[in-house]
Length: 262
Image (cartoon, rainbow, N blue to C red; front, side, top):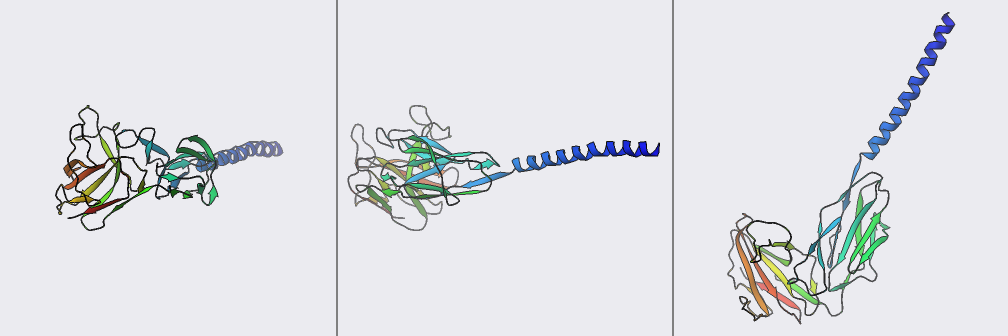
């Protein structure tokens, strides 16, 4: 009788051990699948890299046929999943020899649409650091340089009219949102572009305190585009107390040297 009880107990324990082991294995797998990794994007001149890209679709800020994009945040991926990201080349740059690597391993391209390319990292099991090699300005590219000083910063901007942002309504009823594009240091000849000068709250610059190639900007004239135009300005920008001046360069044909006086 005792032997039968012992056999019964053993038979009862063995399935419990097997069940516990299986559950533990599943929990281990669940723990791995719950791990999230971070993708670090590179910052360089002439391109944007991001998990997704926002189209700057106002044709006043890019020539016909050109598409400008700005990288947006989407930089996490779960353990074991694939991660797809986009690379956009701006119009004054070439990338015939471009190589993109993740953790020093070249990433394959899986999609191509003009200057917009899509890449995929398969089966991610660690944080990823992206690097870009081989982007260079075209031989005919015009260089954009801003003077350096205290109390302000200056950069090229793109305008996305799809984003709803208060206090920036256009006459068409659409909302304008200006996106900083510091990665643009060159522009193609004849490509109109806009730039912004952001002045600190405790500093002052007049609306004509910016000179481009020795010429002061003018306000736009009806049916008469000026080479350099003061396009708009905002005081107390985003309630920061700063003032944002925006300028537009029409049909540039030479390097653009921008002097800012505070």
